[in-house]
Image (cartoon, rainbow, N blue to C red):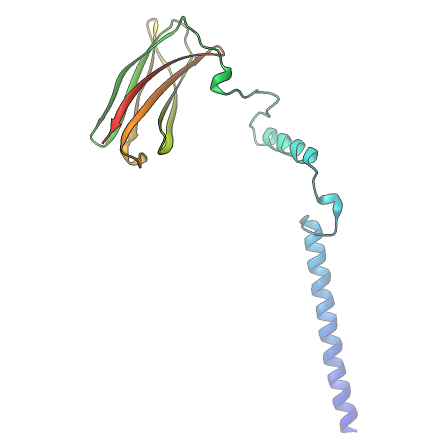
Length: 178
C-alpha cells in the first residue's frame, strides 16, 4: 500500500507541475499577443506603408505637424534673398563663452536667426533664435555658447542664416576657438 500511496503522491505533484506550466504558457501567450510581440502573428508586422502612415499619425497625435503639412527643405533649397543684408557684428571668445551678435538690414519683422559653427574635425554647434526688431533693423542675438561645447580647438566657421518669408540671407565669419 505504501508504494501505491507514494506513486499517487508523485503523480499528483507531476499533474500540479504540468498544470502550473500550462497556466504560465497561456498567460505569456496572452500577454505577448496583446502587446503585439507574438512572433507568429503576421498581421502585427507592419509593412513599410503601414510604418509611414503610423509615423505620420503619431506625429500628428503628438502635436507635431506631419511632413505633408510642413514640407522640409534643406538650406540649399531655400532661395537667397539678395535684398536682405546680414552683418556679423560680434563673434568673440572670452570668459568661457563664445558670444555672437548680428544685425539684418530688413524692415520685415519676424525672421529667425540660425547660427552654425562648423569645423571638419568636430560636430557642428548650432543655435536658433527669433530676431528682435529695432527700427528697420532685425537683431540676432546676443547668442552665448559655452566653450565646453567645442571639443576641438582651432579654426571654426560661423554661418548665420536669417530666414524670412521662405527665403534666406547669410553671412559667414571665421573664429579661432582657443
